[in-house]
Image (cartoon, rainbow, N blue to C red; front, side, top):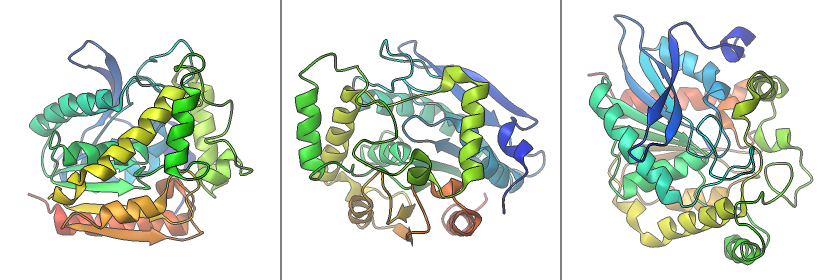
Length: 315
């Protein structure tokens, strides 16, 4: 059910926005919402996708918080409130996805050490890819993980191989940190940005509200360097075979009509780990499953709750 706008368009009482300083001195914006007093279920680290801001997920944070979870999130390096690695102010860029993994390694170690268990990591889109990669590389091992529309393969003209080759070609001409395109979430599509993300106009408008309220956290198109690194990182994770060795219980939520990431790549990867289950959504869901219309969102949240009860029981 759609939550009242104040829960989605204002920071909740008790939530704290601060910064975390990485070992190299880079400052990342963070969100912390302690569990209700006397009702501690555990700790959730929620990581969004490319260009995401944690404000977009306040509604679902409210659901988990009411159930007793402490909620933490950080903006990924180079986007939202965690600075830029390019002179283009709204361009999402990263020199190498390994930097994301290093940040998750450092921040995750502190989070695991300081928060009450069980510790659950939830990643949407690029966040899902990075969480799975970190678990596969054994640099971050939570008690359970939920991957929502995970970016385990990218869509490109002619397929991922052609897309990576095109990104490599374009990176040779001009600054690699320049925006790869001007608008929308991906080029070569007639769908509006909203239709690519969610069928729910009200929830889509929440993001626009936060962009207007805090223009400094807006992230626009990715750089060519980000595009090339994304193709490379997803390919290398797929080819490494390491995902099959992940022992962390995993729940994957996959939108089969996803217009931004490759759902078939996600289904193939999530077939590998021994304790992974997948919930599929059809044409009723676009990319942002947790910000979809109520029938989709409610089903997704119920699946996550059931998974956490089974795989991350209260201690």
